[in-house]
Length: 573
Ligand SMILES: Cc1cc2nc3c(=O)[nH]c(=O)nc-3n(C[C@H](O)[C@H](O)[C@H](O)COP(=O)(O)OP(=O)(O)OC[C@H]3O[C@@H](n4cnc5c(N)ncnc54)[C@H](O)[C@@H]3O)c2cc1C
Image 1 (cartoon, rainbow, N blue to C red):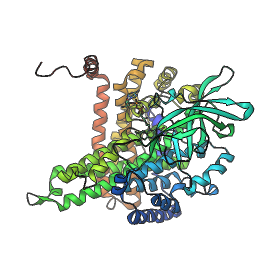
Image 2 (image 1 turned 90 degrees about the vertical axis):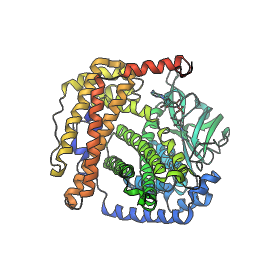
Image 3 (image 1 turned 120 degrees about the vertical axis):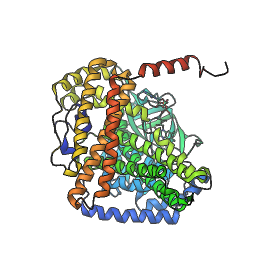
Image 4 (image 1 turned 135 degrees about the vertical axis):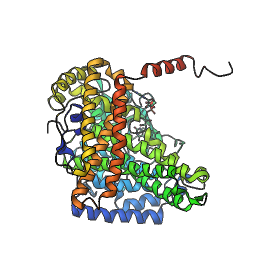
């Protein structure tokens, strides 16, 4: 394989089908174990978790967290030698999906702990750090948090100001600064904190990651934020006042913290996507239940085509989402993979799919959907955050478009720095990408896919070429300025999301068709065809609009509104 990201290769005009086919399959033993754990989690939730109470009291009861810790949920991704269960990425995310289907606050709390809070230790921690912290984190004795965001640095995470200055003689850093919006801020004991540290002879300030614990002198957390939803999750400010952080608490190399943060977030985004899939499944259950029981005009509302449109979209969306998430986790479990774009795609798709699902579920419920007596409004409040955190969907779309344009392999070494931060360093990337992309022609075809998927495969191949062509065109036209062409980047990202979704669902259904035969896989085939039919039309529209669009008008209208300080066309002058 020339590239270790399917999507990056796709941008460069190459369909690396070895990544995608056959659809990853769990080994039997792990699958059996997973079923047992899922049953245990479901039973525990049924007996102990009341999402309405969590929302009302703005807290997850201690017993719930303790109970989940006892059944091993806090240490799923931690290797057995450090007291965890050593799950594969697929198994971890599948359990996480289940949690997302139970309660949003719980998913955010556990995600803050495991998908991002302790992940840097797993990826970059020294043996001593792992031995010191992971056993406590695996049992839930300690909860972890991930602290990147600051008042002046949200989407632009590279702009953080918290400063840790090394006092080499005394073997510690002196850390000052603050973080905001930190999930688990009020309940965690262990914090992966991203700071600036002066590095090298000229003392250039670079980002480093370090382990900070609540018991360190000078550490404090602020009051709980009052939020729209996920009320049971803790979100606070963190304040660092001359904290002495031992030098051995540095996680990964000094000055390489941005890479650490981005890799942790890649994993976090997949967990978030899996949790959204769980949420959509719960919403489908609620909607179907209501739609089949509620009669209007002497007819169950489930028989009205407009309601069927809503339910079918939720089902198709979650099937596609599962296909993408578990294709990606399967690739991660296989190893040696760059999944930064793929996980961003999953996050964007998942958060928008759950937001659509919650909106439609509320609509199907009618008046009761709007009532506090029913779970729809809580679900709506809880779901909204997914579009904002772990990289807003706007920033991730820009990332998908820009990172997709960079080639891997040799180029990775050559422009290592730029690759870390493609949003800021696009200039270095574009000249090379342009050169490379021009040399390649998208000639690869998918081979050996089941005959029943012939049309879908044809469309995928056709529109994969469109993405390649569009990339070439915009790089030639804008060169380094592409970074500022967000209307275009948005379209490239949407084309990419649809293409990855198409290939994931094609691969999954191809495996089902081959394994079970067409008769038994017919329903999944229909879902696949339904999605692909809509997806290629969207891709075609986006591709056409790369050249032919009304972007300048939109820009002008927005600029006018900003200059006029609001809307200026009121009917009554
Ligand atoms: C409940 C909650 C929990 C959180 N948990 C954590 C946590 O555990 N750890 C942590 O470190 N952080 C956490 N965050 C912070 C979260 O990740 C940030 O809020 C998020 O990254 C956005 O940053 P911001 O709020 O500063 O918004 P801004 O970056 O100011 O963005 C405002 C708007 O501008 C858009 N925008 C910004 N840049 C661009 C661009 N280049 N192109 C187009 N649009 C752009 C954004 O998409 C957004 O719509 C949490 C936030 C919340 C609300």
